[in-house]
Length: 614
Ligand code: PEP
Ligand code: MG
Image 1 (tube, rainbow, N blue to C red):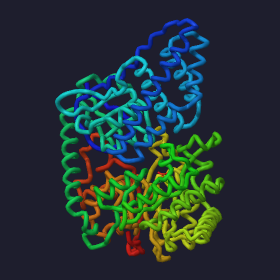
Image 2 (tube, protein in one colour):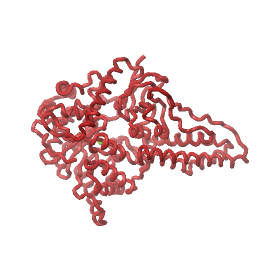
Image 3 (tube, protein in one colour):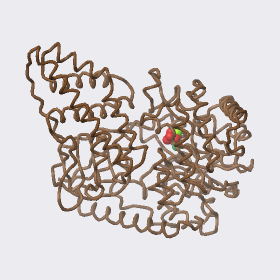
Image 4 (cartoon, rainbow, N blue to C red):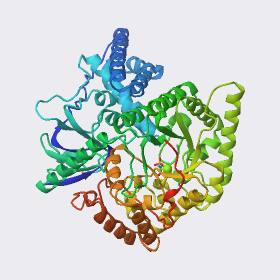
């Protein structure tokens, strides 16, 4: 009986294949009593198991470094830190002494206690690190019991879709893309190490599946969409055909993109558009540059810190920013300063619990409250600007005062660098994100102080409609093409045009072919998106005429509801590029990517607004 499961798509790709449950056998731990004179021997066994675990982790770290680079290898530096934690060893030793039990039992009980304590903490990042602690704990236990701790799935024949309650990072790092077509887990999140590794390995993946995975048996046929997070269990022939068609289309676009990657991306009537990528780690930026030959329109810097890099370590940050800038050169990279708060927290900061975190101490508000951390980041980015085309932008600006404060801090850091003769690009472009309605409506004043704007529509939509972007119960209200959003976007684009500045968009709606004509028609000429969407949007750009897109915007501005705008967009796409309108999409998503979208208008030719060189 076919059914559909829904999770978080963390690594894009369309896959049809048979399921293979990961052998998630937990070690069966003997629970034995010992005599007091055996305690020392048990402690020695603990030390030996920890030492062996250490050697294994060093080897794993080296192999990941070779295949995926330093960033991913550093996940296992975190594992070494867990192993070295004196508190963990102290608690296991006390348990052996007090309970007079075998080291395996002590190890299991203490890890369970540790994890239970951490599970209480209201911090997504910290909870994600639970997976790492369990991973290390399992490794010690396996070593005590003499079992191979790396349980990578073994099978013959076609690549399989691996299914598991969770996949520890040490197993994910060893997944072989030639044998594993995709994976699905019940737990996890976009920021979990396993998800990050999936993107690096280019293995499509869906995590945090809301429904029970028990409907999947070994060998069950699955159709998985790693972008939307939808999994069809026992898909019908119709779904399989649709997946195959979409896959073929994506491959065709991909080879087209590769063969044309040096040609300008322009509309049929000759307007050039810049497509760039959203990334979260230096290694992703390097992959994108190699694969798609595009620059980076949004580098979400906060994700670098979940791998254990300290926020106060300027050198470490500098190296990552510099390597990224060099890899992307001669194209440009926009580093967005820290956007933590909301749903992204870093445990080392001990941020207080808030009732409304999305409206609380987030993004630039946090940076201005911790100028010490802000300055370290700005110094590191400025230093990197001497090595490539680097731009900086500030997230979640809501007042002029905030922008001025951020610029003052930036000036102080620049003065300090000058005084110490540290080179940086004096002409570096500075921008701010427009993701709060107050900022959109104050665009005329804000633009006087920056070189560019970037529309963060993921947030602009949620703040405009007071609809939490992560709450599925009110997803119906999360309307990127709500007329109010479109009007704001158009206003921002017009302000940029009038002031000879440029505006980009880095929210998810830029990746939606249905809405891209509206965005282009507004005069927004840099569209930044997940790399997987670059191919269809490129195709879209090359299929439309700018004057028609502008006319679409003019009509959309007259609409009173998102539904009316949706109809206009659908009709437009049907006429200009019907291949991108996936009426046959089984997920019922509106078009090729199923991403959220939005748009605006431009009846006055704002398409000519200044655009920067990459
Ligand atoms: C946005 O808000 O549109 C955006 C790109 O930022 P983030 O998704 O990181 O909040
Ligand atoms: Mg945002």
